[in-house]
Length: 168
Image (cartoon, rainbow, N blue to C red):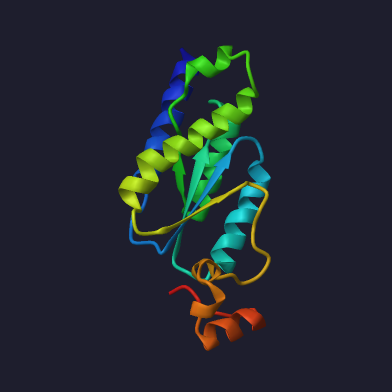
């Protein structure tokens, strides 16, 4: 009974996080996490500090129920980022071919794309990051996507100097 209560609390907390702020973010950065809770804090701080566009961070928690998932939810709440918990696929638990972890990660990314990114952020730039990859200095995602010839002289100069438009 206690375990079911704990599970219900975590699921409700996850639903609360899912109802987080939606909006016209220029960039949506998504991170699928499984077991590196400490790394998530560094990554979120780095993105919030160095991405120059208005950015919404989505954390897809792909960990099983329990203390690890609860820790991820706590980090998301602390930093004000949206936590998402994809539906569990029981068929993966009995899988005998390929890497179960890899297939589970792929399903989480597919779920995110179909159920969150396309319907809620159709005009935003979408960035999918591994949990151990984060910027160490200022970066403009938009200008990285433009061919060099389409960037203005000012954008190229600011990028060269490590500066750029700051988020508002």
